[in-house]
Image (cartoon, one colour):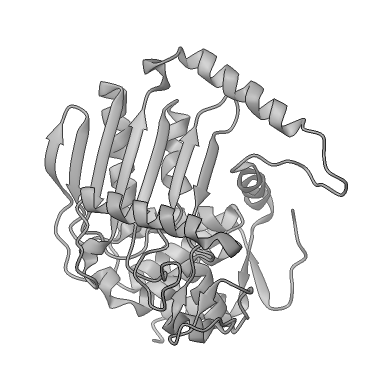
Length: 341
């Protein structure tokens, strides 16, 4: 849905946002190709309606020296016909996870199934849906589990012990892919950091301060912990998060807190044709989606939207109308780009 531009926002075309983002990333030290890959992800996130995961992330990256530490070439540590274990060489996650996704697609196309583990990436990898969309567009089914540095307290705990640990599943259809992408935390870390920068209060029940007390102050929450998702049933989010953290160990993550190896991704990608004909599978999913969307509404109920449907609509609109960027963010990016920091 298009919203009116405020005086505190700047509207940029996709091309303008891309040019600004790539230039700023190169100014803070990223090679041209990495800057291109990172920026493509960030601009797409903004187009899909996730402003906190768009250009503002560059400011977070710029302040975090761990994103630009000494790097080694990305390398394959172990490989079989159906699996690859990848050392990310301490490159930023946006770049390494993108490369791992390409490996997963290639391996699944060759063998019918692929298991790809990735470890030793520097912080920040963005939206899992971004990496799985090309998987589904290749008529493959994809799952991605991402474990991260501790920012989330376990249910009943008062200190961060788990990552926001998102999971995603992508399915090919006869139309746009259906992609479920969800964090196991009550709020995304990127959203929290952006709210802190903009001095915006948090929703109720998503964070605690460093003493374990509920807080809506984003600055206190940054020092404290995010909570698992689930409202009054946070054990559900906690259980999923712990499971994904454990899967990260299989992908090479370290148990030691504070090490870059605590970031890990596990791709599971396969050809649905191993079980049913591809055309039948896509036809059946299309029928299932149509049945779900035709469900009678509750009084006052809105349209029933399928996972990723809203994001694809937003992207189509943004490609025509551009994206809105907070003016503070826009000015900060231009300051970096002009070499005034």
